[in-house]
Image (cartoon, rainbow over all chains, first blue to last red; front, side, top):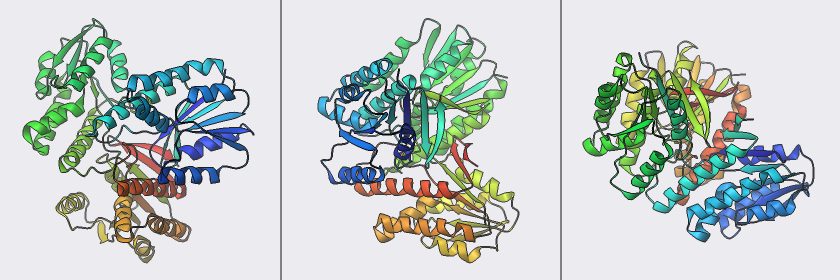
Length: 173
Length: 173
Length: 173
């Protein structure tokens, strides 16, 4: 049974850096599963910035939707896999299906696989529910979905951290 | 003197679940004071979802504004009362009076009653001040009011928790 | 080498109060560096509210942009200096230059000075990255800048706190 680590935090709070440090302790080869789609400029810049920070120990896989399949397909191959990030994955699922319960079913499929995996998994997510309730209905749906997904992943994880101003705070494990 | 427990957290972060677990330890009958008004569809769905999760030990009271009166009126009757949530109560007060200091006076009236009560009280609130400053002036007023009310309630509470990704972190008590 | 204390938190979460309590332990005279500009009504009210809370031990300096110069210029004079707040300073820098890397260079200039200072410094900042991604591009830029600046300051600080509902949680030190 693989070890699951879940890391949440606000924007630019050091989540990815912490996740990479944890992954590196497992040795090469490491899998980096990018859920962001390199379609727009901001995202390309972000992906390039993160990639340049990681060294040659990493192999990058891009998957916007079928995260469970990618994780299952590479189980046992990498020393650890880092999923960056859950929030973009949920965004992609919600945009693809316009159906929050269906998006959440993908999360449940993923967490249901955990007992059958061997490679340690590190998830990076975002805290998006601590601001004012958004006026936009889709944004509210997304905010609720992200909260439920984070709760589900944290409940099944062995270790959970929240990063604040770059500093990790352990919530579980 | 009643025990006061204050729980804050982001959207769908497990606040209500934690509050219900804490309340259940006190035994039946339990009072659930819902401050949300079942006028709109999203809220009805939310209220129904929460109600279906609670068992027969609970009795629901709906009160959008006069929370202090309802609390005082039922003191000594329930084994514990759960107020869900402070943030909706503040929203109702601000919409009713359009006057943040008057809304805050309601909070002070409530906290001023605490030393005279016997039934344990559990408050659920929301963290709404960790996003970008809203452009809308009413949203800024609400955000400040919510912060001040949370600080007041937490200062008078015996135990304070913040929930993050479904996990409680004890801040006091 | 001066002691650096960094305090972050949401709106009205008790950040400034905590910072003032910490500063007062150092004895008079105390420097209060206000980065907010008293141009608009809300800000004037906020500044007046904070000022009335502080006693005669405090001397107020207003500086919207050249924070490093003000800090360097008063080093050794005050028993402690409180900067309130980093987030408004970053807002001013971003509005003045429309250039996030240049704004971040100001933060790096400031943190680079820390080893050469003697007066303890207490920074108040805001957590703005835990809400929904803003639709407005400038707001996203600001949110990322604020996250990076907070991480930089927290990394160089001796003590770091986050305040939630008025309660401090120590993250470092």
